Image (cartoon, rainbow, N blue to C red; front, side):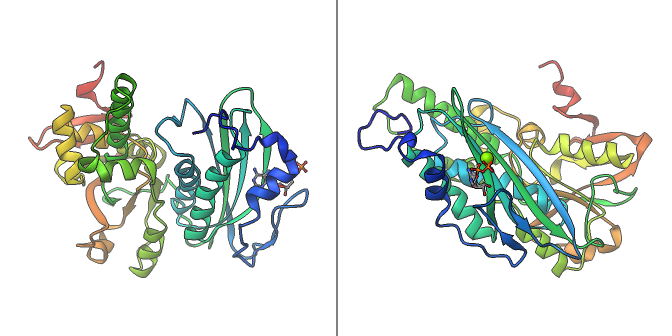
Length: 349
Ligand code: ADP
Ligand code: MG
């Protein structure tokens, strides 16, 4: 659908750069008082006073970060925004504005870019974000999207990665591993389709996995939940690369160790059944899968009762002193050193 073969599709060169920008951004409404000037001048003007400002950027490249043969452009636009908002929420802040820069080859039609911006628009509407600018340029091949998110946080609310303390509890939101498995399912279907284009995939058993891969949600709700529960995490990070790698970031930067309990890692039933089907170890998938966009944080033990039994939050371990190392405690009660790839037992596989 993205190939510009069809005569009814509009070539982006027909609109010119300004026509294109205007066309793509005209439906976006400004929602924040802090946005003084959005799209349309040389620079956006923001008026964020009193609070601290959060700025984060991600660059997504076709063929490296996404594959358009199973990633619909609308979903790509939505996900590209989520990836950035997730970083703002991981600072315990509120995301307010984004800029969107794209580089496109002439293989993309206006209709294709409209789809991309529909996804961006939906994300902005659902999360209360103003699109305030960007850049549009051509690429020789493929699509590049770079989004910058801007957010705000009260000085006393900001949470860093490097402030976890010994004896803190390690907490994760939602469940893990589903997005990675969704990608595996989509890749398998793509291969089946390439062999037999008439095949009709039945994806009902994988609906949650595919949703997690194609339409992830950043955990804005958790920032609010923690405020409502009157819990300020001692350290926090979002899970983009897999649980293992994020725990190591918190521990290395905080100069602490950690015991993570295998049996506590939250898994959706579809993750468990699909791991069995694909002959994968579900713990490995949760540790190394990535793209979950859940939040991982540490809290002081005194806050345990406030979060206990909350369906969104699972205590999966605790912080130890640095020289104890970062370990996975298996169901068989063995301690295995965690590595960014998962755990040592799998090294060299
Ligand atoms: P300049 O030549 O000063 O870089 P541009 O012509 O690139 O300005 O952009 C004009 C306006 O449109 C600016 O406000 C810019 O932020 C905005 N803009 C450009 N490209 C995009 C895009 N892809 N998405 C949203 N806004 C954009
Ligand atoms: Mg420009």
